[in-house]
Amino acid sequence: MARLILVCGPTGAGKTTYSLSLCEEIGAVRFSIDPWMQTLFAKDMQALDYAWMIERVERCYQQIWEVSEQILVLDGKVLLDLGFTTKAQREVFTSKAKALGINAEVHFVNAPPELRRQRIAKRNQEKDPKVYAFEVTDVMFEFMEPKFEVPDDIELQHGRTINS
Image (cartoon, rainbow, N blue to C red; front, side, top):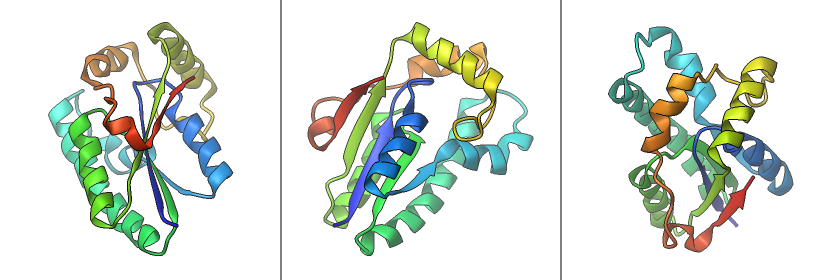
């Protein structure tokens, strides 16, 4: 039976670590936005410009969905570790899933800000390729922190909250 999981959470919450573990557990194909953005656009980025970045994120989302849809139509399992900073971003994918007759699961991974900062510092230092795509600076952390929209109970109806 097809299954679509959207993993969201603030910077450093443990989304990728959680996603890797869950994919192994349930046999899902994982798409993560960080390697896509790093490979396709990092060299072109001149400044920390949210509008510039989100426009490219949207392009990646379109391509990722095209492949995800093919997997889901074949009754596969897909996990999207795409950040999903806003409710609107999550709704795009939950609506696409509904059109396929699938109730997308929103999994919200969360941790206190100080723990997330510690994890980011460790990840930046260790550069483990499983979870490290690029260095997250304090400026980037502060820039993204107020942009994340916590999922509400309706979004989590078919999902769960993970406190990591």
